[in-house]
Structure formats: structure tokens, C-alpha cells
Amino acid sequence: MQLSGQERLNNSKIELILGNSSKRFSGVTSTMLQVASRQRSIIPLATLGDCFLTENIDSINFLSLAKICRRPLASGRYRVFHARRNNEMIQALILKNIFQAKIKIVFTSTAQRHHTAFTRWLMNQMDGIVSTCSAAANYLQRPADIIIPHGIDTTTYYPCTNKNECWSQLGLPGKYGIGIFGRIRKQKGLDRLIDAALPLLKKYPDFTIVITGQVQSKDQAYFDAQMAKVKQAGLLQQVVYLGELPFAEIPAMIRSMTIVTALSRNEGFGLTVLEAMASGVAVLTSDAGAWPEIVREGIDGHTVPNNNMADLSTKLAAMLASPETLADMGKQGRQRVEQHYTIEREAESLVNYFKTLNS
Image (cartoon, rainbow, N blue to C red):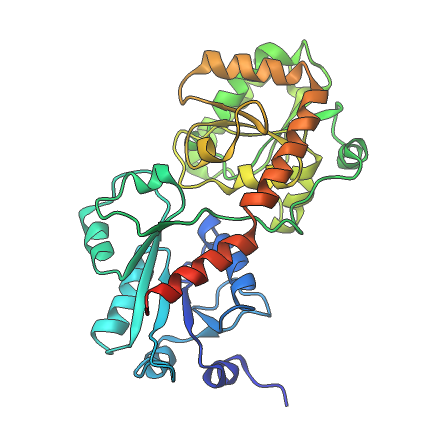
């Protein structure tokens, strides 16, 4: 007989609990789900919260989890609760301090900013702190115990066999795409791409900027201002806005690009760059997030200093002038991801770290 998810959990003696508290799908949610899909083959796990779960990942409710965690595992080891948000740290601390749960709590910090006093207090209650890159770790008052970069599912993000065919299937103008992905707001730097590209697009008519992502009402004026620049330059045929695409369509869109840009003013980690590199696409990034640690200058693409528009324009011009070089960069980027930034590597590294908490 097929057991319910809750029955499977009660019989599996789960060892890892993953926070899943947000009802809004975000990069944090995406990371958690992708890593969990690999971790479940290494360690019995469940999420606290059932939002956005795939069929192969189980969830557990709070009271059931509190009951299970009254005692340690049969081996004597404590279960591990992995939190990625403040409210997940709070959930874990309630379990531990009020329900006397026998757990170790780990928090992953990706933010490149100084945490609030409350967040710092929460982090000081953790049994372990993970950061995803050196830049984020440098903001922590309590040093990270380990740096484990995010990884990418290379079976979802992979290169086109025939880039020209992939592009033609999109039905977009030109021959080459310059993609920018994610919710549109000033932080993400669409204006930087527009300002750098508009003086170049007439010289390179085969290139088309492809913009995808939601525009919230509070960001509509910002987006309209960027498109007004495009209209004034007479380049509406070379700048296309596709709106917010279903998540399942994003990988194919990314691999069809010739360049993917990520020009954020600030960033936590920034998975888009790894997704593009895994897809065999050259990247052009700001120095936010983990990108300076990931992108090898002139090999996988280019990284430019924040607010250095002159450098951005120079690097973009060089990329548009040499599509052949961009293809080589894409190949190099794919190899780098395969060697250092796979989702399997992230999942295994986290589980290995969790095991040290009970040693």
C-alpha cells in the first residue's frame, strides 16, 4: 500500500530538516529544492512546510517534527535543521528551546550587507554558520564555519547542440541574444545594460536584448524609463520584453542566448550567472554577489566594477565584436561549472558539514 508522506517520514527516521517557510517562490526556495532533490539520496530528509515541493521531497508539520525530535536518532546523533531565512531560524529555536528538540541548527547566510541586530542575535544561537562566498562571509560578525558555494543542476541547464537553431525557435529578431533575467527593478541593473548597449546596437544589428521577468507596480516607472530610452534611440526592434516566463521555460531561454548579463548593484549569491555558464553562454557581470569568485576574467566572460559604466561599455563592445570568442567563453564556463559548481557538489558538501556537528 502506498504510504502517505507523513507515514513515510515517521518510518524513515529523518536526519535533516529543511526550512521551507516562504509562500513566495524565490531564489532561496529554488536553491533549497534543487539541493534537497540531491540530498535525499544521501540522507533522510523532510521540509518544514510544503510549498512548491516536488513529488520526491517529503514535508512534515511543526507538531509532528517536535514529537519526532524529542529524542535523538538511534545512533545518539542529533538531527540537523538547516535554515536559510530568519523565520526558519526562529522556528528551529522554538523547537530547540521550548519543545526541547534534540537538534543542531545551521544557518546559511548569502547576503552581502550587514545584518540587523536581531538577525545577528539569531545567528549567535546557531550551532553552525555556512556562507556561500567570501564576499558574503566578510559581512558576518560571527565568522562562517565553512564556505560552500551554490551549485547548478547541469541536467537542466546545458548548452544548445545548435545555438542558431535554438535562437531561431524563439522567433525573435536578429541572430544573437543578450539576455537579462529576473524580476525587473533598479537593484538588478537593467538600466546599466540599456545605457551601455544603446550606443552599440546600431553598429551590431544582429544582436537583440531579451528582457524577461516580472515588473511589479512599484517598479513600473523604472522599467518604463528604460524602454523610453530604447524608443528614443529608435531601437525597439532590438530590445524585446517577454514578460514573466514560466519557470520551466527559463533554461531553454538561457541556453538560446549568446550573452547573459547580470549587472546587479548588490546581490546575495546570484545563480543566474551559474545557470548561464552551465548553459554554455558567455557572461557579463557586475562585481556583486559571488560573481568575481566564479567568473574568470576573459575566460568565462567579463566582470566589471559596480558603477564603472566606461568599463562596462568597453567590455560589452568587445563581446559584440567577436561572437566566435563568446562561443569559446561559453564552453569554458560550462567546464568550470562541471568542475566546481554542480548541485551534487553542493549537496554532498553540506551533508558532510552537517555530520561534523555531531562529532
